Image (tube, rainbow, N blue to C red):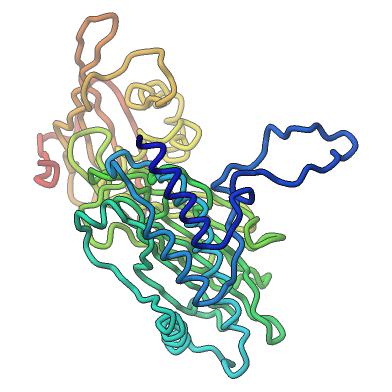
Length: 439
């Protein structure tokens, strides 16, 4: 039976590592409960939360990789991480993390230069048979996808000679997972400052593929932040989840102060799939994703100002007026109201609701198809004003209806704003131009 084969593999993995099964299955020595503590803990950590004990050496890393290579994925399209692989993935990340930290603090490596340090790490791992392997998937690798280190990236963030950042990429079923470790040197000793890893996922959708980071320059108070972005893994399709976070160092490496934590939809049709750049006082994230107010894709520009522990979105929201309106309509009104001209908010709140809907709201009218852009008309040279018209089809109470909505968009510097919205087209901006980029 399938469950019997998986259990057999799991036991073999434990024996190969010299680890008693009780340490994995939660069979711990019986102890008297502390005062006020019950015999059972409903919040007891799962098997994926507990890394396997073992040495953070090149041989110890090779041992975990060998065990991971024995894990069988019987149906790789399910996207489920087999139970035997779960603690091994975490063990691999932590052994590599500790191995790298130990080498940073080794005598004779001061000052640490990224390329030379990476070469030494790879050389030591190579002596234990551990090499980088980013080969394409084969039928065999789909059954045994784990146990390969695909990439080891070592870099020193610009303007931060006290930092060393390491990204490690690992093979999983249907793709890769990534971990980011940022180390900081103080008084001649390197310590882990921020560890960012998917530690306990049981589905590949929660793995962190295409991870990238960017560190801001020091601010006037001597602090800085780290912007991190990752793409959720899936076994098929080019639409994924894109997570981005802004972190500051916290009391512990795995307890950073999260300034911002957001999720977007991304289309993987460009290379690289996104760009991320931190700057003094903020960051910019650039990627392509599906339109909300029409079919096709558009460039998304996410730009934030970071001040202390506050994150505020700033212009530009988009490159073109119709893309701005697409972004504006997707935002909740509290955010969308920041991007209207003075005095227009009262009239625009209602019409904003015509285009915006919350995914969690099951009440109210829903469009049976995306609204269609029928016109994006420039109102004249130097006006920096456009009229954008939509045809919106809705289904309510099994009845189909359609109507048109028109918006006036103005631009001041690099900032678009909505100046007007109505169901009738205002005069003074003749023409029915529709950009070819929408086709």
